Length: 289
Image (cartoon, rainbow, N blue to C red):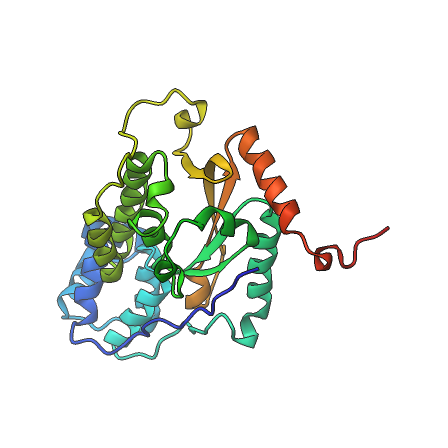
């Protein structure tokens, strides 16, 4: 299994913006009125207005209470606390930290267990943290520079030097990825993701890319497929996303596993054949006769 070390991102740093401004920004990002948020938080609209305007100083508990109702990410909750003069509440550890051994093992088990189908673990900026072995044959066409850590999964997909030229339905897949990224930006307000979006949107279509023509494949009715033209034939996938359900660590809260499933029998058969060719004696260690 190929793994990269996940680095600890920027920690909550002191900000010149008051906590009230930040809370108002999150409320507006969630498209909630003061009346709606106050009702859901079981506080008066007057109190919320005073907090947002700076006329009232919220307690640590009130900040966390409002952040919960606004579904603010853990990293941003720390930033709210720091802006109000409190210490951050949520720890942020590298994935290599011994205290995250169980979580790291869980990620490894999911990736390994998904073989012979490809899967990757990514952080909040789509930096690849780990992959399983099934991914390697699918990214053979990418230039070495884009495969040198840290590898960004979206850049690898759409960059002209990545696997873009191998994506049969590039226009459709690009539209899907950009729409998904835009939703993340709207939810998180993450400036790094916004910059990534601008970069990806500028990439030119690879020569011969299939237009956004209609495709009668049944899968198109339920999910956007990824179709790759590889030396092993055209392989078709749909994907699922897995996250930790109740994380209290910033790193874990931002970790996601993207698992790709075969969309047709040909793809499934090809991946099983490739996995068998990659198998080593160690893979059978512990096997019962």
